[in-house]
Length: 230
View 1: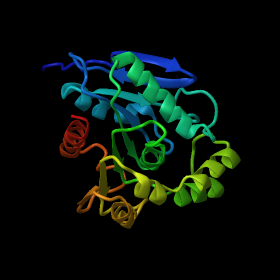
View 2 (view 1 turned 60 degrees about the horizontal axis):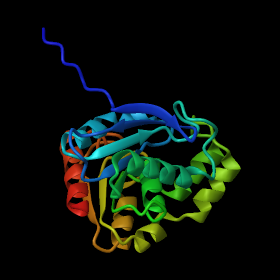
View 3 (view 1 turned 90 degrees about the vertical axis):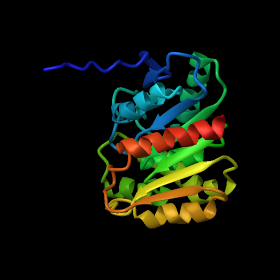
View 4 (view 1 turned 120 degrees about the vertical axis):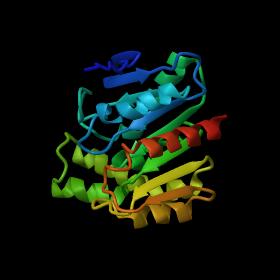
């Protein structure tokens, strides 16, 4: 029997109360990618993507949003600011200005609405949730993570993902499973219509988490980011 050891992240730590893991390639990266997980998930759910970035010359930062994993405090009005904090950390650690965002579900929503704040060079949104859907989930108590419902609800009401897509002036890749039972694929189609020059890949079948961990689609995301920042 052969034992295969997976190389760990280059750095695991806490910055501004946010638990993160940093993946670095062997040589200077072309860009960094901030990976944003979904509701009630954690940074480790994106480690496979972090390793894919590292193998193809990109740095990646995966972090626990507040209210999740090992980060401090409830998720609240700081959610977009926290994305910017991790983007700044990636720039500091790598010395490379180019940053892209890649988010799944709730993370997809945040990738869209935070793109301007972090000066992202590209956005990949996987089965992105809507702000309205997230707000309903908060009101109905469907989420398991710790949140300041009033503060987070205000942020969701203030930042509309369709409007963000309309204003986006960098490449956008949308990936969505047509069998998604949580966020209908029609939402990504609406975002695709709103964002000039975006690319939509609608995958037959699947479910809400299947696209995020598909190796072929991870490779597509990495190529898309490399092309956008290269």
